[in-house]
Image (cartoon, rainbow, N blue to C red; front, side):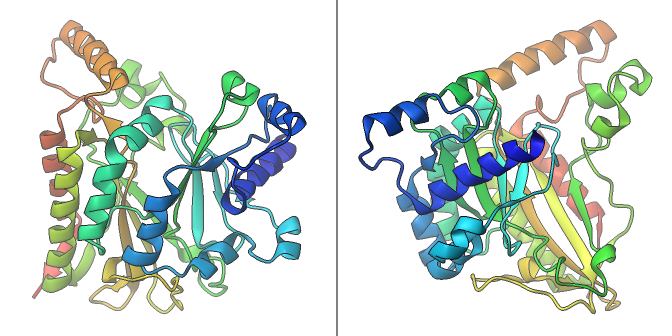
Length: 347
């Protein structure tokens, strides 16, 4: 059953990339879409903005982008997105394109896709246009269900999917060192996490707690210029996130052997996307900012802040915060301090 569900969700995504769901349809087709349970009818949200970002800002060739999903008509009938399971604590599901260049993430929580569509997208578009080398993850498309459908109401299939760059691109073709690729989802670990800390850690299973935040036990050993380049860009990007009230974002760090043949897309590159080689010539590092969809001014965040505040008051620890209940300024400061702590720069 899981395989059938994944295949139909994959087909929904591919249809949205290649066909316009707002085209005139027959009554039968419209009714079929209304009662879709898994294979939903999706369309692109603000295709004009994302098209400009892809072509004008990131200089990604549209032909290459479409080929990642199976541009050839005959090939497209056979192509399927590759499911990569549940990689997130939020319950999101993930697919990668057949060539591994792009990652498709579902946004199952309403407050996340509502914040991105209604609040963040105009600022994201402007920021990326002004800073084409920004380390905010490059989101190339947002797909959504434009009309009521049974599957959306029942929650049997995601109503929103985000297409973004895949920082792990190149791993599958790295036959000699594929098993040496590492990835870390880094957040400040000084915050209070109920799933990790309550009841002596017995509230949630280890499989859940292990996804709350990774730890990078090593150091990124780079030159002073490379370290300053990363820190300067993160300061700019996190200020933009703070200005839009976003918290709980993370640094997605990838490292793989420097001897690996690093593959990238034809899009505009920057050192920390293409891969910075450390001073010892041992590792190559990539980094982007991920998961900036938790907004302090949204109802869900306000409710969680009140709930956690009450719990902390009962525990007598009023000043302790979670990453999702702290204020954007404090989260930004702790986040940048965390990044500084894993960098070892040498002039």
